[in-house]
Image 1 (cartoon, rainbow, N blue to C red):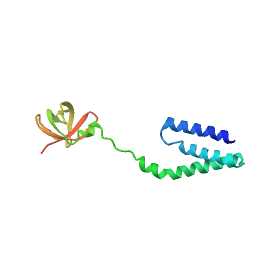
Image 2: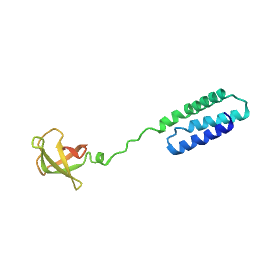
Image 3: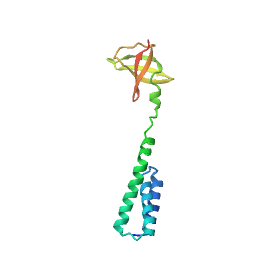
Image 4: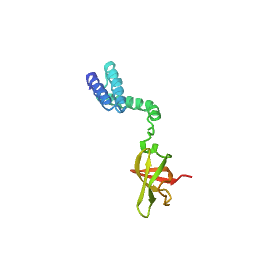
Length: 143
């Protein structure tokens, strides 16, 4: 292996990095760059080049890992359903678990609804949304 091989590997790793945009192969590209420089200036056998590549790639990974871990934390993005929790709705069909009935209107949209404590809530009552379960709202009678 020589300078040309490592130059090709740099290009391959950079293309892979650009294609994934996940910071997966950038460390390998940097390791290949260091190995290419070392093999250009020094007469190093194949095993020595592989050792330099592994050590330098590991070094760059270890150097940037704390930074990446800090900035890669997934941020919670609220869904539209979560935005409905805490809002008031009007009961348009009696909510009764035993009868399997219950509909409310929330922001002009008709929803299936159940009571959070399994109580019967009469038509016309104002309720508060406590949870969204798929296409069903869990509600409680507003005080």
